[in-house]
Length: 293
Ligand SMILES: [Zn+2]
Image (cartoon, rainbow, N blue to C red; front, side):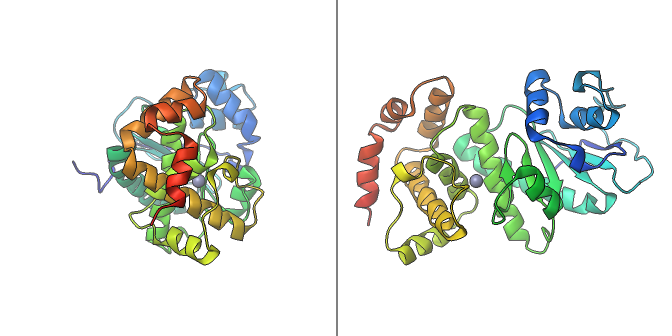
């Protein structure tokens, strides 16, 4: 298994359009959900003023080899693919970053796959400048990445700290996996907690944050999105969630969590599904967290 270096299947320029035309997100997501369209088709359709279904297929779409590059023009959207990820970005100067992103995502694919399994379909990734990122995702200014069906990563300075890039990508990739297992909402502490617990091998940041606060936030206060929290509150919410998910991974195991996510994805209520798969209620699990050494 050579997970260190992604096999580049596809590298294509998809047209003289700007990424800031990929909006509104709801339109893109609806179009993608309705037609199961790849991102390039949505981009191309928006650029041409067509419905996505009417967008022309790019040449060599099925080709497993690298396609000939068109002359590079500022503002063109390019795409690089492995069998597991499709990375779209603007500007040829981002090619090496895109490759680094694919490399880190492939590493996450193999590493996290051992715990939560592997996605059933390639995951779309879009690289943005920071301004585009906050505008398009409406993420709070402290967000390092976002996932809404597409992994969205702000690229400014991304290569300055390789470990941080890998952490952010692993985090967002975990969200993508969870979404494929369970398209319905799950309590945010589980979603963010798993992403936080699996983003790296070291949870000291979370322990330190909870130590400083005195105690972790209880799970029943962490069921809704953290978006409205201040940066300080959010940090404690993420840390509390990550420690809870880590405990769950250690006690119940990845398979039980995957089954829980699948059950909820198929329509079961979270509480009963949790009790059945994890063999204790959420309340009992909270009690165990409270008495943890
Ligand atoms: Zn997250």
